[in-house]
Image (cartoon, rainbow, N blue to C red; front, side, top):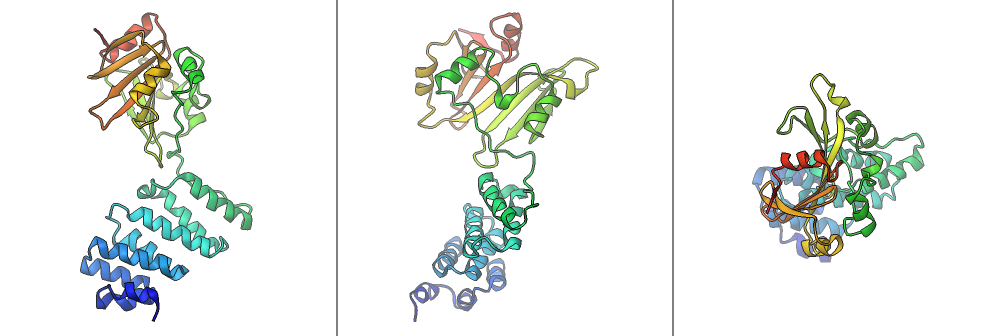
Length: 304
């Protein structure tokens, strides 16, 4: 009698032996046929973790990746069991490591940071020097500007700040050459000859959205980079109070897209309480000239 048997005996009789034997196929079949409840699935995961063998974690990984992937935590647990397999194999099984990295192409695994896949890729390269990591080009780990850094704040107010070495005035083609293919592209955003690109992070769901403007007859790849939105989640380190403490009194207050908006030089900041507590920072190419005024009018910026 082992301590793990105490927990295994909590399982339905038809499932006990399958779990004790770490029979991944039979365990998956049981959950897919019996429509077992959430608590039972998590119990199997706990048992696999306690057993801590390659076979046990294969059972856990396949259970959450295939049979009960509708659970909120399913892909976290599938990734946990999958990575533990690699650890137990001491990162020597190339086939297992490549199978793990294959999850990078699965949209439901966007909760897993690219850094973890790169770590595994380095282990593969130690065995196969010519191996190249295959992660989708249109998914990124986006690092937004540190808007609570006074140096960044001053640069963004003026014309010196560029995101990932991109500068205002370059073409869409040049922008994508630096940053890569976008996750999504939307054409004619409320007016003719305007294209918005969206870059979404696979790990923290951060979004940046650069805008490009052109004219009739222009190829969209030649549209010019004119402004960019950075979408932040409100949290204790970037609260409205913390932001205002660094940026100070705005040059102009108003309403942008129905939300409170503040302008600081080339930057418009919108605090969106209706959108799950998020806010965005918009950096534009122009400052206080006529072009800037037209830009603000496009977003219904009302002074009051």
